[in-house]
Structure formats: structure tokens, C-alpha cells
Amino acid sequence: MITVLEKPIPFGGGIALPPNKAISLEQPLEKAKLPSLIKIPLRQHIGSPAKSLVKAGDLVLKGQLIAEAQGYISAPIHASTSGIVKEIAEHAMPNPSGAKSTCIVIEPDGKETWFDDQAPIDDYYSLSPVEVQQKIWQAGIVGLGGAGFPSAVKIIPGLSLDIELLILNAAECEPYISCDETLIRNYAKDVVTGVEVLAHALQVDECVIAIEDNKTEAIEVLKEALEQYAEIEIKLMLVSSLYPAGGEKQLIKSITGIEVPAEGLPVDAGIVVYNVGTAVAVKNAIIDDTPLISRIVTVTGPGIEQARNLEILFGTPINEIIEQCGGYSDQFEYLIMGGPMMGFRLHSDNVPLIKTTNCLLAAGSEPQASNIKESACIRCDECVAVCPINLQPQQLHWHAKEFNNDRLHDYRLFDCIECGCCSYVCPSHIPLVDEFRLAKSNIWNRKRMQLEAEQHKSRYLNKQARVEQLKKDKVKKRTAVIDEKANDKLAMQKKQDAIAAAVNRVKQKRKDREN
Ligand code: SF4
Ligand code: SF4
Image (cartoon, rainbow, N blue to C red):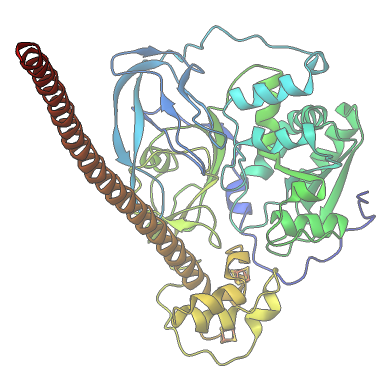
């Protein structure tokens, strides 16, 4: 039985960071302009890419299904505007390596004509939990707060396992990012409805919306919306604004005191966590029957002329979004997708906006002080004190440098959530989190190569075995032919002998009669 605590408790570790959110919250939320071209990647999040259902020259309508999910962890994709499919081709993606992905490229016709197959409903209770889950799946909803895990996948266990608690994550703890706060300020009623729909889909009685205690305006708006519209009990919990309070496991610990084991999932503890943006997407999918085709994105940082939040269609080129925010300022150094702590540097702004883009941070000389020189570890243990997972980053640092994978495993490298707290406090300016990301990726690559080598070896051995078998079969066949010939010869000989014997017997009889 899960108990929601009266007051949140500290999650352990973490750091106080300047929020830097006011700058983007000053401007009202607006819809971004319709871009000149929409490039919708078939791979937008973890899991398998979707499979295109359209071809160049096709007319597509807004909200139309244009790519189907492939596999369990995958999500369908819908056209974010109406227009003509110009091509299906490889284009650069917003990822750390700049690697390309196949995109459906749509030339907008400017009409924004909706696909006319929608069937809005008022009473979501008329749908069974399974029907709600299926509609969430069909709407292409993925988690809008992190890696973009397809949302329906989290609900499926709810139908077979015992989910007791639904947590709505509105903590948005990383500096600069204010898209969830903007969403709450503008769509608080939809947040409440989305929570209720999710509670129905999961069949849970206990729901909590968790928000950082320093988001005063959003808290007030949420309180009013809950009073006015909530039909089930939804608790509002104000959690610490210490970073990374919004981490899934940190939030669960603050609210329930439960520590989800490193290798475990919240669902194993009977808890499901969704981002508030996901809740609104669920409300849109179930009540309005509209798929996920846009999201709110924070465009901010010292390197942008006009920081703000915009509601943007998926596939919109990032350089057109930057233009709409007045372009880069003279302080601009580089562009980050995500926040300063967990985001990554983009190689180019000529890439499309995808489902997991929550923030575009145009960095100036800060927030990532890349030109400060790194020095040797002084074993001060400051990194240990701030690690929310209770790891020993300084030990990980030594073993990462020595490529000692066994020791990296011993020191739980793969439990690291890459929050960056250790790098932030390190007086020697060691880029600890970058080292850990690299070490993880090296280990994954090595494992992948090992797996590939094993597969090659197994294919080679199978081929050898087949060749050997073929040889044996040939020998067997040849021996059988030789044996058959020998048998035939023997049979023939026997026959000839029998005939000769018969002839001799006849000759003998004739001789006997003549005598
Ligand atoms: S904070 Fe930096 S210098 Fe201090 S122990 Fe950790 S890695 Fe070493
Ligand atoms: S990046 Fe990893 S090691 Fe560093 S503080 Fe965060 S969880 Fe701990």
C-alpha cells in the first residue's frame, strides 16, 4: 500500500541553481508561424522508428496518420499540417551526433485542412480503460518531459498490474525551461481533465500533481483549476526546487518516501509518472480526438533576441523558429536542445523540431563554461555530496579514464541519470557527466560489437556445419550409388550363374539320355 506523504521529503543530493525562467515567461504564449517546409522524422524518440504510409506526391491533411508504429516501443506519426508530400528522404536530425534519419517532407498548402475523421466525445467514461489506452497509442503520444517513451506503454501494465498512484510531473526543475509552466498557465483545465482521463485508464484512485514550490503563478492557476473542474481527488504537492527534483525517481522519493531500485521501474512499485504536457496531449486525444502534432517549446537563453514560449508544429525547421524569435543576439555561441544541465549541443539549426524538443537554449558564454581549464581531481568529495543517486562520481571518473569497465560496473555507472550535478560543483572543472556519457556509450558500443562478432561467428559456424553436412551427404550419395552398382553387378552375376547352371543341368540331362 503506497502512502502519499503529508509533506514532501528531500530526495538526497541535488543543487540549487538559478532558475532563469522569467525571461521566457514574460511573453504570452503564441502559435509559431506555419513554416515553409515540414520535415517529420520517422524516428523521434527511443524505440523503433515508424513506417511511412505515404509517398511523394500524396496530398495529406492535418492530423492524418502518415506513419505507423512498428513494434511495442514505437509510436505512430501524423501530419502536422495539410500539404503535399514532397519527398521521403534522409535529413539531419536534432541529436548529439547530427546523424540523419528518414523524414516525410511536406510542403504546406497553407490551408491547415484537418483530416475529417475525428469524433470528439464529452464523456470519456463511455470508453473502457482499454479503449482509452488504444486511443492514446493511436494518437502517437510520447512522454513530453524526457526521452519520449511512448505513453501507452506505461498504461498497458496498469491493466494487468496493480497501479496505485499516478504522479503528474510539473516540477520542470532544469534552469531556463518554462514550457510546462506556460502550459499550466494557459491550459490548467486541460491538465486537470488529462489527469482524470489517465486515472480512468489506469484505474487508480490516488493522483498527485507535483510542482516546484517556487512556481507561484502556476501553483495558483492549478489550485483554481482543481477547485473548479476536478471531479476526482487530485492532490497538489509542492516539492523542493532543488535540481533535479523533477527526476522521476527523485519525485517518487519526495512524495512517497519510496526508493525505486536502480534496475527497477516506478511501475514495479505501483506508480506511474507522466509529464503535465503528456496529460494535456491525452486530453486532446481522448476528448477532442486529435493526435499529437505540436507542443509548447521554450526558446530562450542569452543568445536569442526574444526569449519566449511558442506552440510549434512537429517538423518545423529550428532555424525558422529562431527567426521568429528575432534571431540570434550578438552574445550567441551555440544552440542546445534541452536545458543547460541535461541538454546537448546541436550541430546545426537546420534540423526539424521533434516530439522530445522541450527547449531551444541559445547559449552565450554561459551556462556551459566550456573554455574553463580542467585540472586534476583534488578528492574534495563535493561531487559525492550532490549526487542524487548516491554514486561516487570521483571513483567513476578514475575508472572511466582507465577504461576499467568492471570497476565502472562496480561503481554503478549505469545508475547515473546524467543530471550533471557533479560536473556543476566540481572545483577542478572536470566534465564528469560528459565522461560518464562517453563511458556508457563505449561500453554499449563494445557490447554491440561483441554481439555482432558472436552473431558473425555463429553464422560462420553454421555455414561450416552446412558445408560439412553437404560433403557428408555427397559422400553418402556416392557410396550409395557405388553400392547400388555393386549390388546390381552381383545380382547380374547371380542371374548369369543361375542361367549357366540351368544350361549345364539341361546339357547334363541330354548327355544322360544319350548314354
Ligand atoms: S568534485 Fe571534482 S575534484 Fe572534487 S572529488 Fe569530485 S571529481 Fe574530484
Ligand atoms: S551526473 Fe550521474 S554521477 Fe553525476 S551527480 Fe548526476 S547521477 Fe550522480
